[in-house]
Image 1 (cartoon, rainbow, N blue to C red):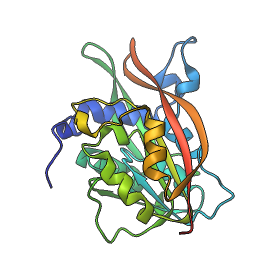
Image 2: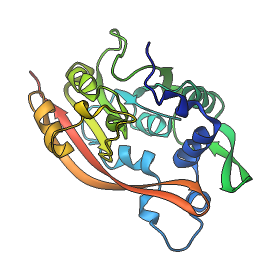
Image 3: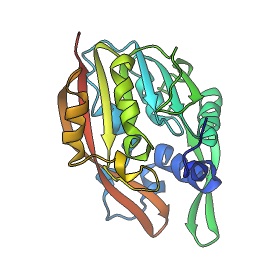
Image 4: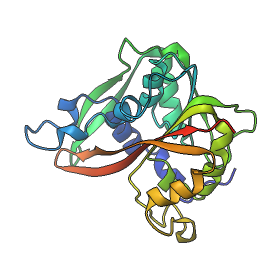
Length: 249
């Protein structure tokens, strides 16, 4: 499997610790200031809870670009057997440890060489045994993966070298009447995606054109999120959150 040029950054300890904090850090651990965008916290939880339609059948789910797994565990809370897939070996190893033991120690960068030891913990109410993690390329998924009632992909599309390859596979991954939950900050960068593979216009219009034959856009919302780099530097972004319903044809 050919690695994208930026694949190695997702194997670093620095980024692993950032993602463990992003997925499992408490609000106080991430953003201790009384001021600040507190509504942007808990993004890996909200992309499931705010986008999913719990009234529909949810027996199986696929979490693409699952990183260190918090959204996968949240999907399991709806009764689904969940497969979480990520390209990063380091992320999947961490997710498997969390699935097996429920916790994983890491360090939060505070300033310069100063850091704080923390522990990522899967909340006790989330059914860890329903989740399976594996490494994989979202644009070249194994052919025997099957289809699912829910497919969730948060902040993945604009990190793929060939995003249209995933879009073309999605109708086969989502069962008829199933749900596709997408969140993307629409941050198209050449270091991840060659310019010729970018949308020609707004990402929403591009998704409608690519998915419209098989999916109906059922819900759309703006979803802020916050990634802490250190105690005084944060990335604040707003993802486009969408829920799509697979047709029966």
